[in-house]
Length: 259
Image (cartoon, rainbow, N blue to C red; front, side, top):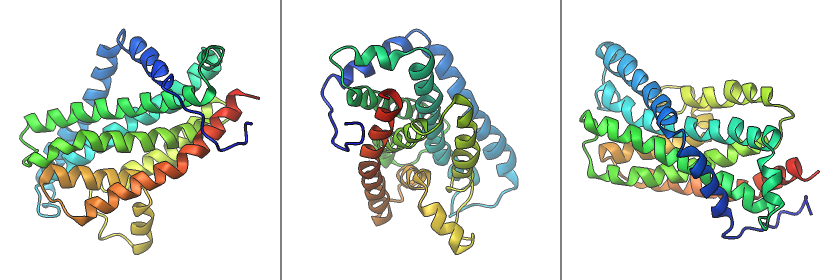
């Protein structure tokens, strides 16, 4: 039943991931280049340009403070674009979903494959930017080796949120609202550019409910070696919210395709 929250996943979901990876292998150079230069521009303009005039934040030079936040933000944008516009185009215009469910794949397998693909994009682009800031000498801690798994964890949640919206919207133009009203505020008010400790307590509470905030906390803490119980709390938050959203996201995507 479409309204049933029971999940029907199987290893065949990996075939969906494999299909997307095959398509990506033909265009990866252009895709990687575009996602590489944008955070590099932010890093240069804000970290090196504006950073000269900005006081240290949380005991760090501004460039060192900003760099881990851009890793997390790059991962978020890579996943959200893939699991909104990319997923909608495959469903609505290319009819890829409809072709897949005509095979032994279940609808849940297709959705899980999409989520895994979005998660991979988060891991890929977040790790690329991590290598960049490492080459610039902005990663002083060996704990940074744990950042790629954080990209997977955060990417999974970003994929769920993005496909949740995809399952609700009537047309592709509606994604403007998602990026303008949700993703852009997350980007600006999740601790990427400045600490949230000086904000009004209500805004701090809203920021705590942001998935990007917790990914930034984990990424910055691991990059700088500032590890502690706060990182455990952020990890638990991401896991719990992902587990709660997974059935709802699958249900909405079923309703979108199976009418």
